[in-house]
View 1 (cartoon, rainbow, N blue to C red):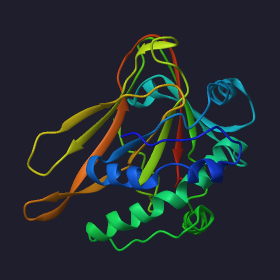
View 2 (cartoon, helix red, strand yellow):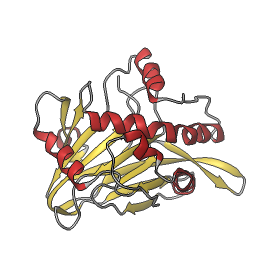
View 3 (cartoon, helix red, strand yellow):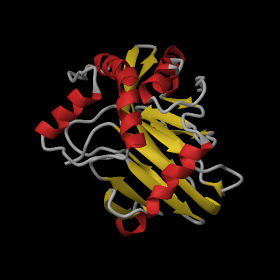
View 4 (cartoon, rainbow, N blue to C red):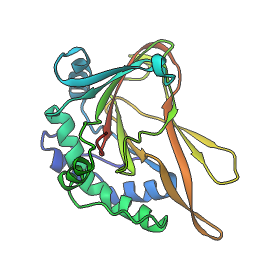
Length: 244
């Protein structure tokens, strides 16, 4: 699941371009998820996590237990997005839209995605999806996130990213990122994705194609976080479509 990344830089487009995207693409096609190791430096992780207590940069706060989503909480960023989040969203998208288009073609879905994130966001906004979806999540001991899909309207980009901002074993224990895959007429398959601080995982939002003996078919994907045993865990979610 790993792809190399060179020295850190504040040029998000350059940082994204340096990733071994053929490896990432192949892994996404075969597994539905791929790790981008050390996408953010420890300093960037700490700086981003520290924003959780900042007023005026978020549009809403969700306490998961109130909605049956699990335990813990998260906040959606407001526009204008903080530069780090906006930069990553814009820089990763051009490398992911070919996979998104390929998946839709294989699954016989008519939607195709434009080459730039700005064009895709214009499409979302024209349909009334105008609220930004990148978010920060905060978990404490005993918290967890139920398996779910981040679907916010008609226009859904098929891939998203989650970046672990805390260090497992030092800042928290437990709290593993979990993916499940439901194949037709089969039991669900679960996979724990091993992440370190600064690693991102790119994964399927809703469906992905899988090659079977009779040709490709569609599987249903969900993601969540297992129960935190101790400490505190912060994650940044980079979702490319906006919400209604």
